[in-house]
Image 1 (cartoon, rainbow, N blue to C red):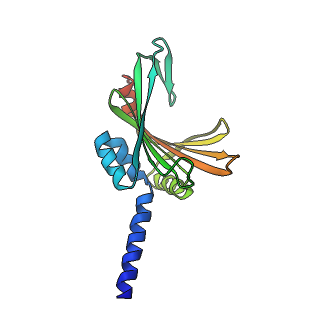
Image 2 (image 1 turned 180 degrees about the vertical axis):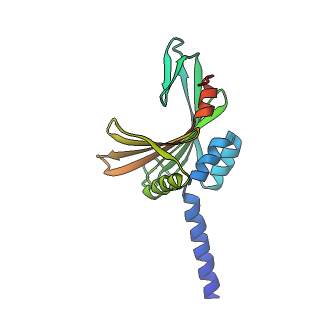
Image 3 (image 1 turned 60 degrees about the vertical axis):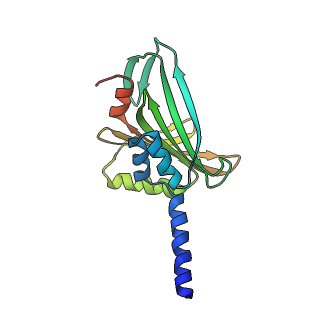
Length: 187
């Protein structure tokens, strides 16, 4: 009886811990599914819907350059981000997953976390999948490394908060074909 009880506790602990983690496959699921399916999926992993952010580009004559692509002049567009979080942003174990769209074309998903293990696991996994380094740069004191495979680009960013003395990890996966479609472009 003790063995059965111990096994049940270990299984429950594993299930709870597993639900806390975010993997490459989780991010790809979020990228490739609509908001309703994303909400269901992330809710099952313990996330809660946090908010919607809308960024409106009203500069009709502005040039738009993303990931090295010159999109030329763009019309007024709204970029909508759906944000799901687990724990408070002031919590050591904070995780945020964001899904970005323009004209209902979901082209990017990103994750912000304080879990170094998730960050390193995803980085190692994409290398096994054949992603190749595109560039590494320092941007406003943050280290950013970008990998590419086909039409997919993944950026990893490390940020250290001196005041709180901890590092945060940011991963962004962009489907560049969908991104071009969102901005009505072709190569």
